[in-house]
Length: 472
Image (cartoon, rainbow, N blue to C red; front, top):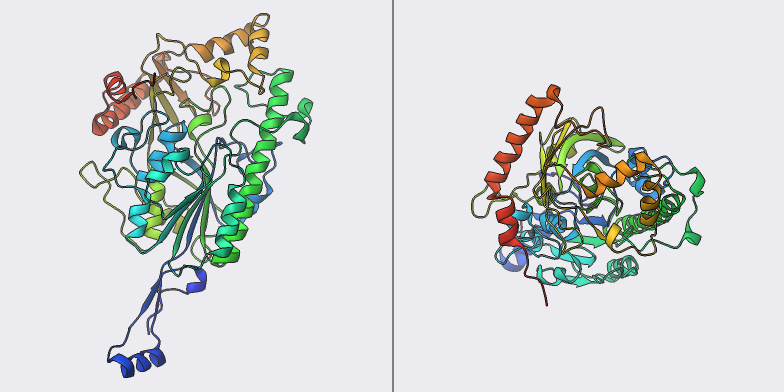
């Protein structure tokens, strides 16, 4: 008898059962030599949460006790990135393991083009029941992905987590399960200020944000929304272990950054860098941290390999994907994965239409703004709702020179931006015009040029070709 693992640990298991084999032989003359049990997999997605906004990565005042206890049981990734700082392209990349230009979901509200193979198909081939509850793809788009069951995908359908827990409790299938649960928290609208637990006068704002009383109140409301996401992550984690066993493979992550200036809808780390924690008892070291650079396009091939399958080839041919498994890093946190990650942003109608491309290495970030002659606008400044802090920025800029520069930087972007993440982690000093960085600028330009060419991305021409036709 050869045993590769134990079913209770959620590992791929080969078990020979002599007594059962003898009984079967007597009945039908054939013995079943082995039974293969693939691990159950649960992926938890939160919505619009930046990497820094948890104590796991240094947040001084936002509390995420559930995310922290999950991290204590598994591996925290310090350098995880999404493919786009907007929901539909980010989630489309996750669910196809292909970058937005290649899969067809370049703009917000776009789905991957017909014929692109998607997450459920891969896992069904391995015998999985594949389920999506909550915001997994971009809202109702999930109904076209081929999941065995979908539910609670409407905007802020916040009982999705309760439904997922009840669904798990009632589940009868003998198939291994691949379940994705997506909460809308901490996506706006954030809880009312009365629900906030932080003192606005004591919060520590990230340095790219203007310090106004209204901004401080908004930050406390965002922190309350993060607390909701943390609660949801803890509930799903506990339910997964209760109903699927202690050895279930569990991960949580976020689709893009928070809805603040210089975060969501931008290629700064505030928009692209995401929390990612993976737990797999007996296989992933508890309390470990990995500095390997990984992307959302890598999650599907990684989980296919966790499931005992063979991920598709990484490449540009038919049937090939952009992602690559980082299972080796899960086994040993010291194992590197990528030397660079890439990102695109295009638009969401008139709200966020500002095309850009970016490349990020361990030390450097290079952003190419494709239409620098245009002003940058998003929901933040064009749809001022009860979040309410943007008018305070404009007001402060009328009397404060520094605030004026920050607001001007929000609206106006140069053609190229270059940041030394090592010395400037908040990306405040653009070094594109610094003669000392000229060679680095050339190297990063070349990296981005080569990647865009490999993707068939011709910049503005591709933007025009792929832009959805506006509805009348």
